[in-house]
Amino acid sequence: MAIVIMVPNAQAFTQACQLVAQMAGPDYQAKPKRFGSLTAPEDMPKSVEASFIERNGGWFIYQASKDWFDVDHCGPKAQTVGTTTYEFVPVLLNRRSGSNAVVNGVFLIKTYREEHIGQIAERYGFKMVTPLPNRFTAVFDVKPQVSYDKLIETLDRDRDVEFAVPLLSEPHYRPR
Image 1: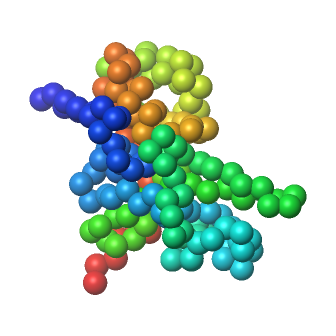
Image 2: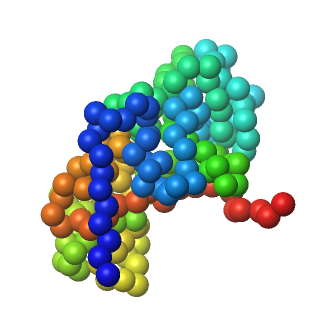
């Protein structure tokens, strides 16, 4: 059995994190107006014009009135207010659970050969978090990235990579 992943041309994307959402699965939807931060609502500066939506573990999820991320920048952002720097990361909506999933820069990557795992880490400067029992697969911290969408496109063109999917941070699914 072969898995074939077709990645559309980036020019077809109309919003930030659209490819990340596509690779995460059919339940996920890009939400460029939403972002996650480790900064609590009471500590968020007023200049960051966004409303608190929900808490997801250590993450606080916010929604802005305009797109927070654009089609070329689906990745972490930082904003300095005074002497404090605030960090923001993209968020996807899990339509099945209704919760928000944080795009945290951790990807599962499968290669065609075992030796490619180390080569991929070296080639792109990724940090291997853990190898998986399938010796062709590992979890990587791929930060920093300007755009996870562009990273997926780059890995799709790499002859050593079979597939790369984001591992998202989201609350456990709770049946209603």
